Length: 144
Length: 403
Image 1 (cartoon, rainbow over the protein chains, first blue to last red):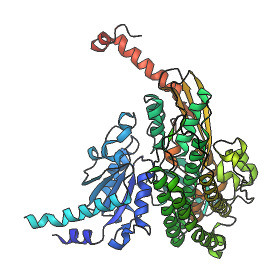
Image 2: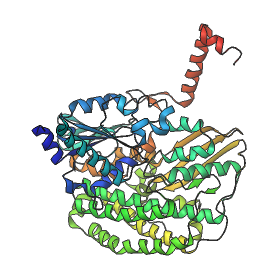
Image 3: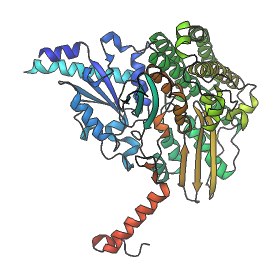
Image 4: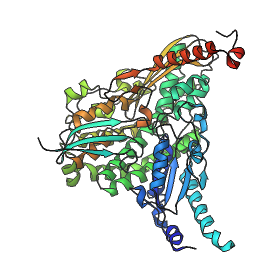
């Protein structure tokens, strides 16, 4: 395991990117950081700037005005990085699939590593998703 | 006048969870102008709603906003009931009131927490959100989900409240009151919060009237306007309560209004649960006649307005939504200008903005001149079809005979 990846898994800082969502997933992400779920005990912290983040949490069905911004934010992110799509909208656009303003699901715009379904996913589901991601990343080098 | 600097904020910034773009023009530390660009949340729900049936649209409008996921279905179902001229059964009215007030509690606590966070007072943030979890548990017991309750349907509610659930729910609501009292004292009596919020971002009564401010933003400026009192719906006319009004219009007063309303809502939920009448919960609607209807309700942020036009089919012919933030957003011009840039954060958050509610269609050019509205776009779209038809070829052959 490279040293950067090891450092990333020790304390993944998350940045959350709302791409035209209904706020629900965003609030559930914030909920994870507050006392009942408290992911800070695993070293996860909400980063204020994308340049400090290791994990990008994407919510919402990307709309036309957002798509250039999503690409820009992804480019600004330090690599290696991980992208987590949260909620039905960012997975498949959900009920907005017929909308004129939501042309693409998020994984057609930027590469997505983990998908967490739900409308909105419960905080438990979000934590489970991130834990699976960490397991997956730390298991990879052992197979070689 | 000194040198002007433009400070761009956004669209992705740690200030608020939704994307929006503020341009602050500052002179030294003082903000002298503000411009807001929105549109990062527009998903075309009004148009989507027109291709769904009346029943399906109830769930579509729930996805307008995650925090107001009761207000929009409530206003929408009221608009449909207005088309029919239907009176909802009494028990359904009570259940709707319980869910709407539960939403108000969690929304106000959410705002209080975020306001504390913006002021660098993370203790308030953590306490408020911890209390909010208890309310979400109550909502989960009553409706089956933490958010997006899916309780509403035209003519009533989809789910009854069981008798055996009520004592547990009341016990749970009672258990948060002491902690909430503690939080109220911590916020209202704190000298640091006084220094940061008193006299900051003042919206005077005249300005509030001129900008048509709604909800807690208006009530903090001394305007006693609340739809629950002014044109009662649900069970509000059966409950004895008073509108909470404060006079100063600053950020502190907006916080006070919201905190006091939280207590009031807890009281309302309890009284509704204890006096649930035994009637049907659903007036089975068979069909919706042609006509127009409006539905207004008092959402946590102000008046939420829905307009539905029915043409006798099972789909709305037109569905128009106006969310409270749409009216509250322009008050930035009165509140932020003249304050320092470090206070801008909390003033921008003080109206409890909800951009995903607000973003309906309007194409605007850089000078703020409106180019197209909804009707113009429909006309443009129809003109394009005509153009394609007249061009001939495969498409024209397929649509032959269709006018």
